[in-house]
Image (cartoon, rainbow, N blue to C red; front, side, top):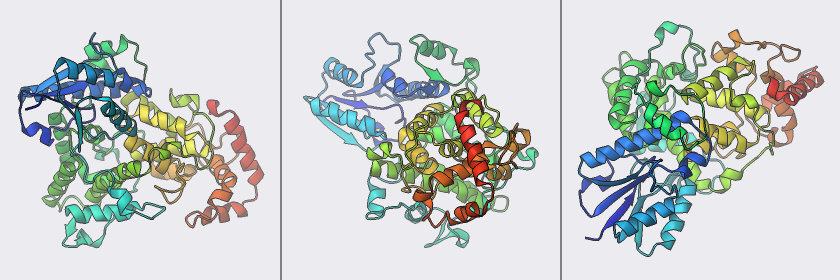
Length: 509
């Protein structure tokens, strides 16, 4: 048999891949920690630690199962930090006759590997990562000829295709979507449960990352790192979610509160995005648990969770491959402003933003409403350039990989794609934030005021956004009410002047 070199990227930690069904001395698996991957954007320190720890654990696991692994650590003297050089070196040293890799999920890596393979003097082959429910091109084919990709249509197709929460050909309990029941604010902190954590001392690896001065953001306690970094730990987090958090997940998935950073969210996105867990096994486990606990857990809890995975997650990945690379350049509103300095420190008088950003810096984590309706909402209202927003989200969150980040950020959050992902911009005044939780109770600004020294910046910026983008948005059928309200308002100039004043001193808010 020809000697084969198989590349495993840092987000391809799938123990169930068919590659590993065979053990063969002539197959060498290549894994590498590289400056190429730590430096293409400034990442959260916990994100770098989590990926390196998970990769090392995966490599150990493969070797325990009898596979040959060549692993480059970030500080190995022989590590050139360059993917092409590393592959060529292994081909030469092991006298490799065939190179194989799993299709990457990021466009830049797909292009890089295509270019590398075109230069190789040996045969090369790409295989599926065997992780997602659909192939790369499925969504583009599904919506062929359509300008807008309606997630709900795709979601229903996935439900039917994989027989998830189905009663024959119909959805269980007669409804596809229980989103209207998933928007409650948390009023009783006694419902909260502590997250399932896996404390470990990572001081040694932390020092290794610090030595070459890899630039990172965020904070970490190296002696008390909490994220799961093995498949076994990830499965424990999944079990814990089913047994302790699922019961209230749907009700409070959109809640905003200073009481707890995680609420009833699963904390499984890193486990799935690194491929330690597959989306189908997560969904099937949750559905199975619910089926045996129907008396205690309503369907709205489980449907809300499953929709996030086989709806949004799978859908966003499909949009990515349908629209890249052009998607990364879209800027529908022509926004140009830079991110305020406090996005990197959390030091702002706006409590919703100081809480969400501070939490992100501390934990490399924020749930979807903090990302969409707090930080993303502000960035859109303030006219921040989508590139600035992309790089911040891609760096700060432990689960952020471009295929899922850019479609959520540039599409869902910033409407920079002009409506491919969302049917309208997701913006709000302070009213929404007040309704969803307790941030406004602890703020230096008043959520009730549109103008004046204490007026919440969200209020005037909201109307400023609609006013300056009237030509682009007025004909959108989902926005008509906003313009009718604006047209009736008496103090338009005051509100616009207030917004302009805030934008001029945006770093001081």
